[in-house]
Length: 302
Length: 281
Image 1 (cartoon, rainbow over the protein chains, first blue to last red):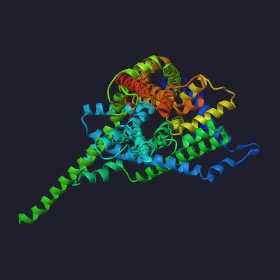
Image 2 (image 1 turned 90 degrees about the horizontal axis):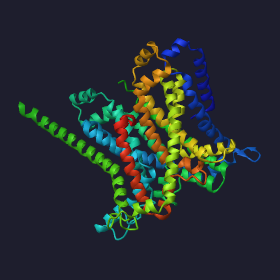
Image 3 (image 1 turned 30 degrees about the horizontal axis):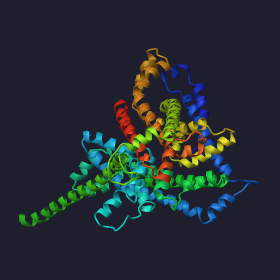
Image 4 (image 1 turned 135 degrees about the vertical axis):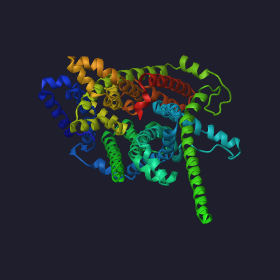
């Protein structure tokens, strides 16, 4: 998390180094530490300060410091379930995206270079297409007259349209599709980095495909898996538009909750508290997953 | 003597074939499903945008270009929102490119610990929940007594643009042989000359790819715009969101069609110019 102490510690040596480095070395080394200062200053004011302001507003009341908003969040019986549902949504989305994305990445690395060039564009395109557009596509697919319902009724499998929009499973599937590139790309780069001689050695020693996959390939690609899971988790937790359009009004998640309390309810201190709770929870899950990844890859010596 | 030895080996061969077959079957089923899922929504939106009906029925009962005509001729509010989005994305990307490229040069040249700390901090907007950051920015602006305007909107978008450019530029700088810049200096070139004639041409792909991804991210952003835009500057994604949520208007399909085709064209052009796909992995 960006903190003021870390940033100050960052800025000071930068300035000192710029002043102390001999002139000759400055000419040789193009990169000068002070070149990072404008961006660091910009982030200090517009990333670190906003997080601090959130904390300050979240714990301030009319008579100085107060924990009344935090207390309300923990005890009102509504906020905690919304937080829990949001985190579960993020994890479920990451799980579905992993089940689809890992085989896709495996197919990618075993494809010919020409096919790879085509596949990478197929994978990157959704990443660059507007999330609103991608969500809209799912409205067309899942709607009452959408692709799925027309197919089902056409085949005579159901009597009338089935409610697919505004359900949690379909929201998870939609989000998994939308965030699939974020899962696939890091896994592809992890798989590409594996020495092919390792899988060949595994096969030569008599291991079958599954055994090689589970004992050689998966452990070696874990850093990519962790990176993908983190990115998809964070993106799914914050996907306001998709949550709202595909989830509908009945399913409330943290981003919409922040918006309702802040913009619509003008209850800024409580909105700040909700934001902080989301921020802390997401970063906590990220830290936990990172730690789990480090523990799991600790035994690798490749 | 050979008979008892052959039986287990035949079973082993069968087992091996089953192993290879089931592996290929599972891999191609799930991977194939993923590929279909990746392409399907794009295709469906494009087909729907040419519907002759007034609803989002799929498959469409007939085809026409009426919704594209309605989009161009009778939707000034959508066109205006698109112009605001273009303007914000362009300015934010330009500002972020300058800030992030110079920071990347400094971080790349430094082997010290602070460079990694700075790197982590500068990447943080990618993991922070967008709406939490947006609310923090809104409260900060009111604390600083800054009224919401295009400026506040652009500042917010610049924050989310920077990490993308920083990441791709760092990746391309890491591939440049240090000796090249040292040669340039030892031959008497100044830092600026070396940057303009050695470093920049070699890092251009990374900077360009990052700027493109950042531009698309800004153009797509809802969270920041929702909190930081004033009443006059509605951005395109929020306009479209409104259109989809409240009216299920087919013009949303036409607008999506325009965005998809533009994205595909830009992506192919950027792939040619910068080797975009190398930088997203």
